[in-house]
Image 1 (cartoon, helix red, strand yellow):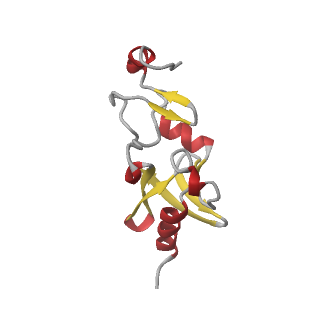
Image 2: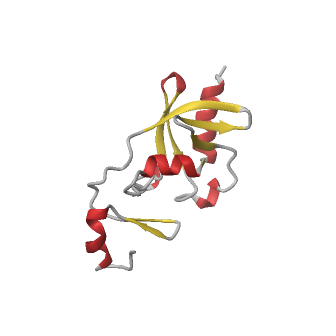
Length: 129
């Protein structure tokens, strides 16, 4: 019989998750790093470790709006990360954020996300504020 945390992993993989504003700020940091590399389907989610050493890559609405928009799961942050679904909560540890040294920029919800060292070069190619 599967444990509740294992059902959570399956649910996250199947339905994805929303990301609260506080979790988004904690992951992005001051440099507004992207939440994920999102360079192909298997990296278009946030990889994280759940309780009991359960690992999952949970798709997020930013890169998977076709099926994540109706998800019951939320990644939140209040000093620690956790995933919530209804009354169930589980601690979550997102894998290290995308490094600032990544040399490419990302578009997230219509907003250009570039490391500050890359903005001038990127502005020359596309309109990036």
